[in-house]
Image (cartoon, rainbow, N blue to C red; front, side, top):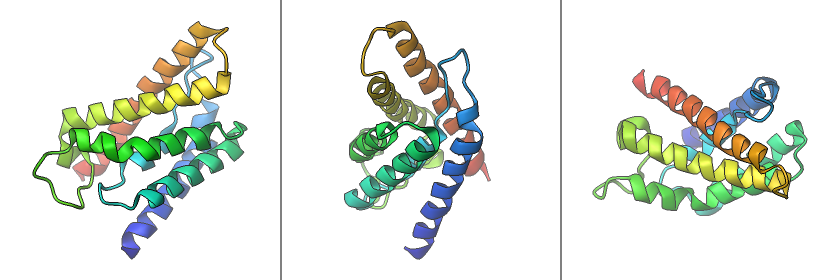
Length: 167
């Protein structure tokens, strides 16, 4: 349990630094930004306490809001993802899995992990950009932001997961 806590603290700090120093500087086509900090939500095992998932997600969302100047948008979106993550994981995990099932590319398989990632990242980006815009006057830019950021973020997360689980 102590190792798991240290692992999440390390991931929290690392993903926050990556977002603040690298990803926030990337803005492809004036609307696509990778959001790597969503990766921490994808890694929680199925029996991790619900309040713990929500607390971690809210905390990283709040910290990203502070460094990205998006007041409350990241925290609200990450909290929503933390709320639905266990239910999404149940959709993709094998029926005869253990109580402490950890979602990785090895345990879920490439296809299921990819769909799990894309679905959660899409819901996150949809929530994030809807709250950020709070109107649909520029709906083409909103659509580009949602789908472009979803694609780029999911591609980066899947690549990182493939590197992490291959070693």
